[in-house]
Length: 275
Image (cartoon, rainbow, N blue to C red; front, side):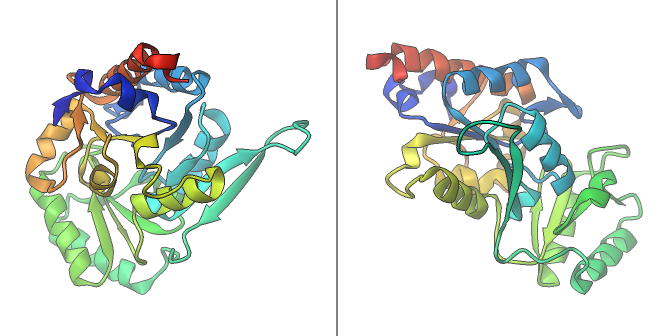
């Protein structure tokens, strides 16, 4: 990983879309940092498309799409995307739209119930995430969002247990997210970018920068050549085979702000000012 300050003005000038994780990428200890939220506005006002790509639930994504300065949000590790659209004449209030991955399976699947029971039985201090009530497609098991904080070894074991049972599973900085269906953050992000904004896979790779911090971001790190990590991504080094190209010096939301400010500054250094 190279320091974010080494991103070239030419690379920054080519960026059209900024995608980012939320937990421990925009937040710290569960709180959205002012520096990170201000940076979302700055990116949006600079004409860039701003799209969170998160493991958080559909209920949160509804709010984010409506109230944050974003062009859409991909949620539940790729099960869905929400965005707003205005009428063709530009009048009236925007309308919330939703798209779902074709392989998304509702989270009342019996395999998920079996995994839940096995995991909670093996680790009595593990718990169902408090936001589970607003999820549609996945099961989230909390190992580090609230006390007691359990070691990563527990999260890895729960992930492996889920895979043994035939599910998909990813470890985030706070949850183990488990679902049925062959999709992830990357597949839905690509689908959303293509269908909503006409992004071209391959030819448009350099137009996208993704910022993340944890193992469930790895498909995004591997896919996009300008992917960035906030400094706390280093704690997952032994769980990641694919690291981001760039990394911030600061952690969590302050690291995101550092990356955003660097991109915006580098764009101004490029011929034409990155427009």
